[in-house]
Length: 108
Image: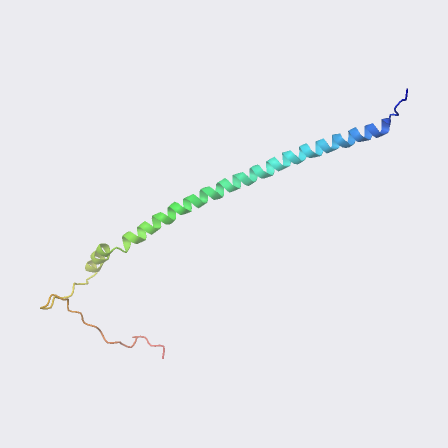
């Protein structure tokens, strides 16, 4: 009958190493969870900000479209004194082109 030799110091050091490894992996898992949880919060905030900016962009585009619509521009032009061109005999409006003028305050 052969007896197996036991190495008590080797077993203790192996158990200590495996315990330290388990502790390290547990700590690493907790730190990774905290890190990715913070990243998720940041990602949610960025996503919400992107959505808010998209809604604001769409609202501004609608406002620009409304303010530059032809009926609104005609109304504003009439309020500040513009008048529609007079009609000619062949139903075409009379359009007078102005000649190019020198600027009033010239740089020369």
